[in-house]
Image (cartoon, rainbow, N blue to C red; front, side, top):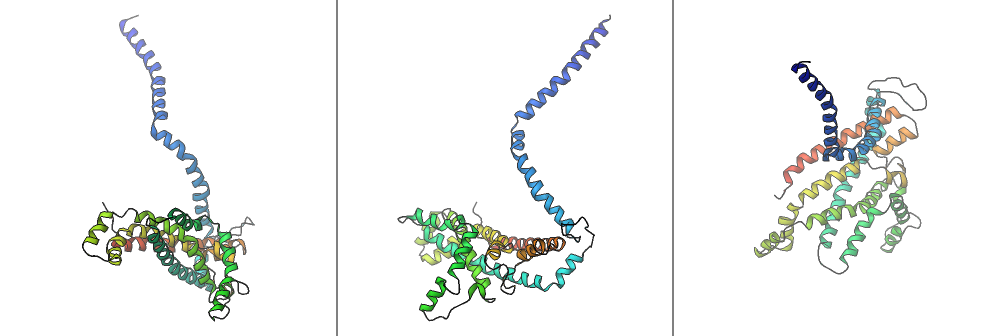
Length: 320
């Protein structure tokens, strides 16, 4: 055996033995890394989101171009027929109008009431923790309980609201039974339910306002109102933009309160887009048309949110 043979043999044995050892070392480094641990924790959540989020989104997109009731295997392709039907459906027009009216009333109302309560609670007074907990308690109450309470409060026959109105000479109102009043009662109901969320966001933002700026404004002779308008409000603009976007997205998807209190009535006066989508899908079993409504609503949310960010960027002040 020559020296070269020995050297080649050693090299071969070293190569054959080195590759598995190197692979094991790489595996050990990968499994011990923070990235691997992070992905190991995230993967189950990603799988659930893909299964129950992405798959239904893709499936509904396909169904929006089909005639499907999920009861028969026949799902003929109808192209844009479902989307063209949206244009000629009068109830869709009513639902869009009701959804926009509700959004225009609900979003500013919730933000104004939340800001007022947050400013009132942003001070050192006795039992302030109790008041803050009570304000946020509206978010902890289930929508079913909220709807039951408001149905009782606004009942035309024995509701407490009609009782107080009668004390000041106002005649009995129908409220949820009236086509002209039902939507506004739902607005009041949801403002009450979402005020706690608005209070928490504004209260956190208020506590981040530098006291030095407020003291400087006071020294310069600013009145409390002027100090609030010129110093505090601009510094609250990031919280206001967040609330405006978040509340608008939730308002455009209004369903629970309508389903529990009026079920779209009376005379379709409270029919909003998501309720009409539900009615088409699970009452009429017209899943193809319901999917088209869902994507139409998604487009509305996308456009409105983009406009809010574009406009809000001009009025939002961020502190470095």
